[in-house]
Image (cartoon, rainbow, N blue to C red; front, side, top):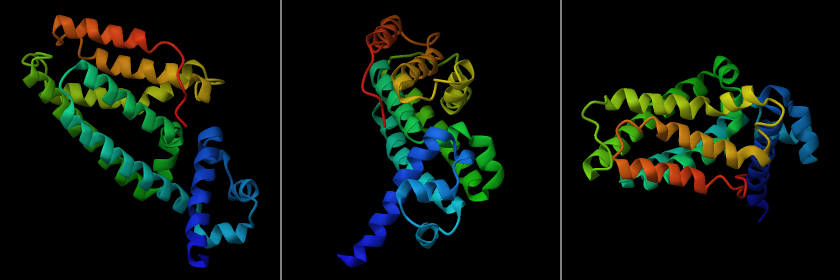
Length: 223
């Protein structure tokens, strides 16, 4: 049992860091604050994570693993309802690690490892969305002959990546508060999928609007 204690402490450190980074932004959270929040000495924190970048990288590793699993689900998308839940799940994951997107430029400028891995994440997202579009086209949900799949997938990734920043600019005091998450994520999913409106079959267009309207009521906030 004693041997397992360091691992549990390391996991608890990451959980607290994620909460603090999400609430205040990574640049505003010092290792002193992290130690105080955990109720441990700075030396104990440094024993597990000798540098702040190691905390960030460990959290990104968790995000990257979850993202990889989520993106693989694009192979199962056949219609706009599938696409809605796929997109909303992606936004929920982004929300769980929102500090990465909130402080993206600052983080990338200071952390070379994060820079290269985030580039991979963008490429993986684009590839997954191309698969999603191809599957919807083959199932008859949309006609993509006149739409370049690469360009559309890239545009969808741009919205995914910067949607929370857009929300923040519009309402900096409240946009990233947990109570605003359900509506922010719903709007994000709707706007990303609205890029497909010119190519969706009529019934699929109606379904997209119905899904967006059905999810307007407050729901449990992602943590």
